[in-house]
Image (cartoon, rainbow, N blue to C red; front, side):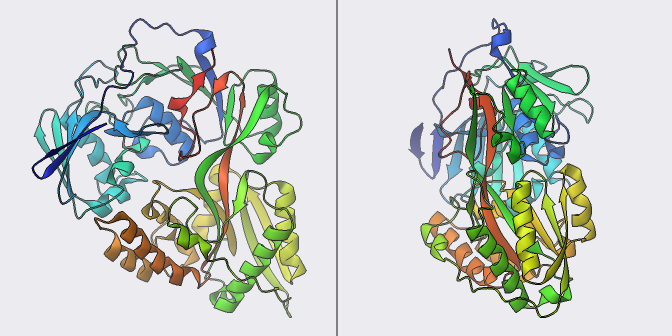
Amino acid sequence: MKIKIKSNVITFSILALGMVSMKNTVAKDSEKLEVILTTEEILADPIKCKGYQQFQVINLFLDPLVRKTSAEGLISGIASKWDITSNNTEYIFHISDKALFHNEEEVTAEDVLFSFNRHLEPNSSSGIGIYLKNILDKITIIDRKTIKFKLKGPYAPFLDLIAMPGFGIISRKSNESNIIGSGPYQFKKTEGNLECLIRFPSYKILKNHIASFCFHIERDVEKTINYLNAKKIDLAMGSPLEVALSPQLENDLVDSPTFSLVTTHVFLNHSNNFLKKKENRELVRNILYQARNTKEILTKFDTPLNTFFPKGIMTEAYYKNTPTIVPPRRLQKKRNLKVVFPYGIFLESSIKKIVDSLESHGFIVDYINVKGKDLLEPILKGEFDLLFIPYQGVIPDPDGYLDLLNPKSIFSKAKLPTVKLFDQIKNERFSLDKIERVKKYEKIFYTFEKEFHIIPFSQNSIPIVYNKKIKLPDLNFSFHLNLRELELKK
């Protein structure tokens, strides 16, 4: 990357990285990857995507303005370069002449504006549009190949935000039934429950290593193991822990944790009179932490989490506040407790240990272990007292983890007292100094976390199982496994 200083504007120009034409490339069976996902469905429309697996597929189908890789960090996507004004509030993106849609038409500033406006519309179904609305003043087309984003203030993680696959660029000629993509892969019509993406022959921006990806949706543990052992599947992503930890896996399969910023928190329903009292919320925290720390509830894919934000987001000082765990008392009077677990995050044996620990201290526990969309029902109806909920932040920044705490989120039935919290955050969101900004967030959360409105429980990596023909990128500094960065061993 070259950095040029030009009056009050810094220009970032990304050198060509493996720019090749794929016009003469023929897909071979050996260059295909068969992948199992556990998402509800595979989508082509970025504003409809919710889970990280859906965004993984979109990442193959679309290019955002800028991209982020494990090796290079922020690099060119649709934009060949960008300028940032000296006060860090205006970003001017120059659209690459190499950027084409799958209908072979050039990407223009109008397409970029169209793509972002779909997230910003008042009734948009976008799950990530709110992040832009919080920081964006306006978007202006300068000319056919240039577009400017003006922010409400200097926002340190802006480029990380728009590098998300969900902000990938689609053609303004797209409609709900026909999304015209801009990335290295295009959807291929298939039969049944299979979705495949194949190389777009005219893609010229960055080298892509795999000829095609075919995705199968499967949540059953035994079926997934059998498919892997039979070599019908090359990679299983996000499957239940029982898959990755199964002794039935063949020796030529590798189970691996992928570094991620997924957290599991326990949400306490403040509609429950017992949980309205801080001392009772702290009691529940002590019971859960004592169980977590002594009963081997977590596997090799997880580590204990005592803070709201996972490691890798805040300064090191934030994570040094180790909580004091007081031996929890036993209740004098039995109390009913409805607990909801999301399927696949914990082993069944771990769930049993958590439930046993609560019951041994006087709670009568009614619990469910819920799959997929079924988890939404108890959340939306508020039919829980304790809810274990995993969440992967949108961006590696404190703002990327605030969705669940929003008073207007799907967790509104839990009645978390967070209005004041969001007012404080709003006042500290914009800053030229990245470290000082994060420290201000830390100060706000020190106070919030001491009230035990939510209980941080674990930081989770996303387990994957794959065969040895796949070469993984360096995942030590990656937000999660990026399918674009996979290679096949020669």
